[in-house]
Image 1: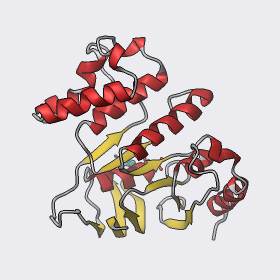
Image 2: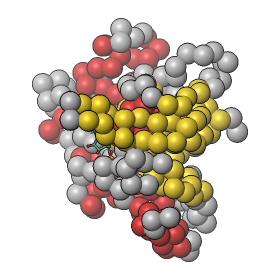
Image 3: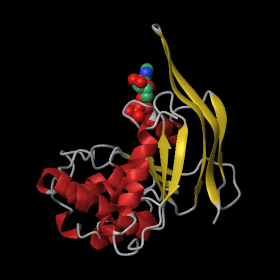
Image 4: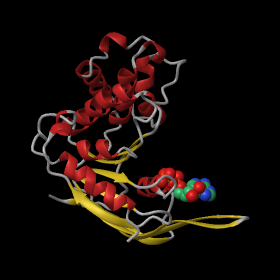
Length: 255
Ligand code: ADP
């Protein structure tokens, strides 16, 4: 499988009148096409900063990011970003929300609008297209947010704690549902989560960051026996507890 994204010795500091906050140091890892990567690390260690750098919103101070586009071009890939809240606008209908990205980017082509129609139907939102976001359940709102993101046909999806606003029970189902849909769409995904169980059940590989300034402490490829069933079922896989214990140890050792 092709490595589509490679981070090499990335470093970043925030500068203010009060001094420098070193957020990232010497971060290196690659992402394969179609791979799901989960990034875990202590609160405030630099996870969101790292995601912003991958998204191209911040430029690394040290190191480089290499994107290997399948077509061989050097262009920055199309990035889809899902944040902690769904950020649907209440003053727009569901349909008007899901086409927002296309509208802003002047990409309302027949082909892309067709994709939106297909996703609305596939994701069970067709009947709700004229409703307001407040009339949807938490899971449906996340599905709508996903359609808005996928409408732009991103090559790489970046998710920053996208399920943290949901209660635990809903979160279990919605995270499994959304990740199943992203896999079905054949996308590559990097997700930040503070929930170790979520990381193990969703990801092909977990990257564990140290305390700030964050560096890669360990990488853990995940192979769960029940993986093909669903992220929810995978929590019952015999290896799950072992991965959890190892992750916990990696996160908490000072080495
Ligand atoms: P995480 O996502 O792991 O919680 P962040 O990447 O948000 O961590 O932040 C890493 C560190 O950088 C924190 O100490 C935070 O206070 C600091 N930081 C984040 N954004 C800024 C900013 N815009 N200016 C100054 N410091 C910042």
